[in-house]
Image (cartoon, rainbow, N blue to C red):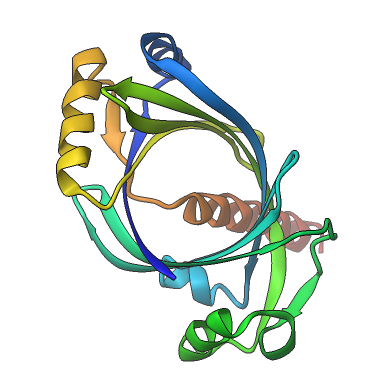
Length: 207
């Protein structure tokens, strides 16, 4: 378990994404498939996230994030991680008491969850950039379930001064961004819920 402190910026266009990409040194490129789990939207309601993350030539990561604070786009959260050393398909349901490690059981139990259902998946193309003087940021291209794309920057460091310094450097490159008010999972759920509402509406009209 660790405390994660991150600042998220939503870029206003693909052009701004490409501007940042071309203004910094690229260190790593990762293609991620994030599979999300919840139960009756209980995690989403609390801005919490449980996911399985698949990456090429990497272990499958299980992550639970529980938010602690969110001020001016800088969010701190308790983050619990485990990993699978062998590939496995994402289960349709996970029983907390038998399928997950004790570290997950404690916090999910406190949230009143005994079972998690697979909600769906979302792809992220992540590029780690060196901004300046060894400070790294993560540049994300997120493909939502409806096919739309969101471009984000993540600054992740336990030192608040690093966040401030990184923000100053980013502003030197561009001011075309907004502080992100949603987690990736909240974005995902907003789209999924909207699509379900449209289908239900269409079905009611046909009936």
